[in-house]
Length: 164
Image 1: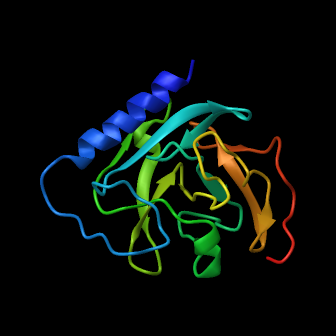
Image 2: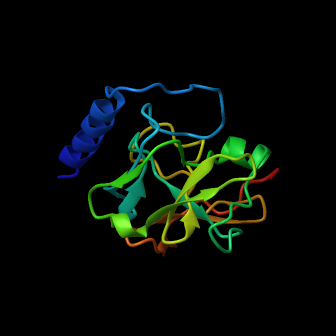
Image 3: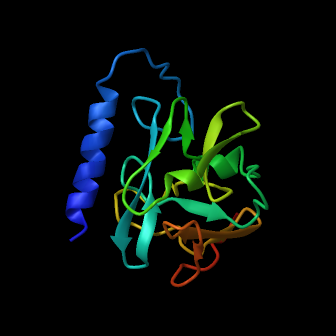
């Protein structure tokens, strides 16, 4: 059952958020955990075992990104908020810590990468377990959920979304 994994991830984020130090809470389209530490986890879904962020929401890769540098900013980043961190990156579940890195975005923030892929949320996924961004073709390329090994999952999906 995957519920204990999500509960453990949520508890870890809450515990990390209780530590000392200050956090600059500026408004931004990027998503990060309260302590500034990004927890990348794995969870079961209709797509199989997928990568999720600190909130338990699905993380995606953007096929337009050909390396660790993000090509999603402005309106793109508003719809596909990057997972950013101002602290450490940690993993749990089946996500290998050695595969997690960060890359500097054009706005100066550090975005979390998995196996060289910048990670993003989809604004249409409002709760853990949702995969509404799977297979969408917006902003010039397709968005895919990732397996804990960092490989794109290309099954399922919504297809293209008009107007983008």
